[in-house]
Length: 227
Image (cartoon, rainbow, N blue to C red):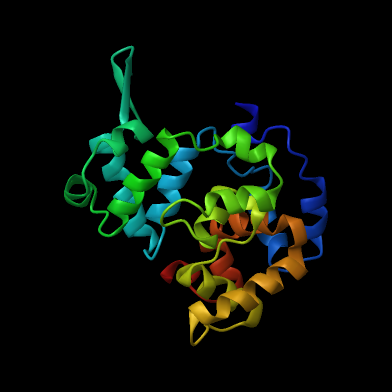
């Protein structure tokens, strides 16, 4: 539980960094005390990563909710039913057609089933990945079908700065004051800027910025939520 909620993570250096950074100073003021998520299980993190591929947030949220509603685990207590992420076992036993129809996953359905089967066959757990060096963990995640650098970085934020087309637009506006003409081609430069600017805290900066877009939009005078 402590690792999942990152309750013992010391953010002192991140907050010191934010005081000198015109992007982070306002978002830290808004979200002071927020920690990133240390996923207790690997498969839910991979579901998130797959759902976010090539999709805006509204579409991603739809897919994840449908997965939980139609394939998720359930537990009842005190007259209430709680819904949780699907297990790798459940998804591995599903068909591509089921996932496409009931969860609207499209091409992602085959990838998610392949990932679930790989986890069933003895893939490292989240605890085991965290015990590895960041680069070793990244390479291991990249062996999963449909998982590239972007998805691996989403699963374990400490290994990079997970930009896609939509978040690339947001950070291009924040770094350079304008939208990129070709967002995908701008990603390498944006990653370099983030690493030079925020170093090992770039994953935290990514999470803080995306969780404070409405307020940050007011500061920069651009509606960052439109992306």
